Image (tube, rainbow, N blue to C red; front, top):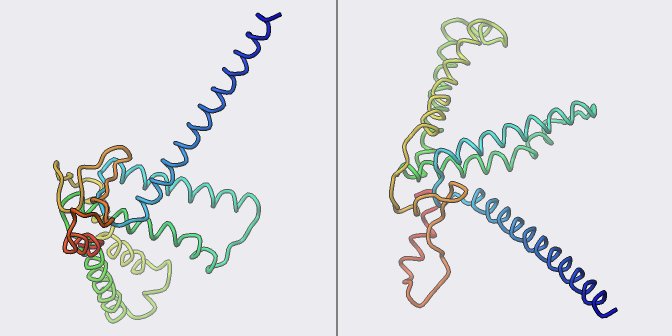
Length: 210
């Protein structure tokens, strides 16, 4: 009788340990996911080539899956809803591009600077085409429109390829340590400590696009 009780108690304890182990594993997984989301939303730090590719593929798969689901359900999404749905993607895409620039040793200000130059050049191209070929050449589907679209898109496509291919700085730089784990890294914590001066805290606070 005692042997049976001991056996049942042992089985119950073993099952309880298994449940606790699973809960701890789920908690660690949730914490890892939250850490990843926080790192993706923060433009500070670095992102290596592998992580940059994986994030791009994940976003592409997610957007394709959502679009397919909405289409299968017959749900029509207006322009405002589309912008709201894509806002997190745009933000994280921007922060990851900044992190990738940091990883190759470039300042984050390169991104808005390049976008500004690209928009100005695109506007100039559109105006020249309209002046030379006439406004009718700008109609969607016209050969001139398609050629202009390809010409305007080429620099952006080239910049994206460069971000995917550029070699990482092989050591820690002012933007953070060499990425590990997820392929992402963050600069040192900004929490105040007795060993950290106000100047150091200000430096990291201002390094979002530095």
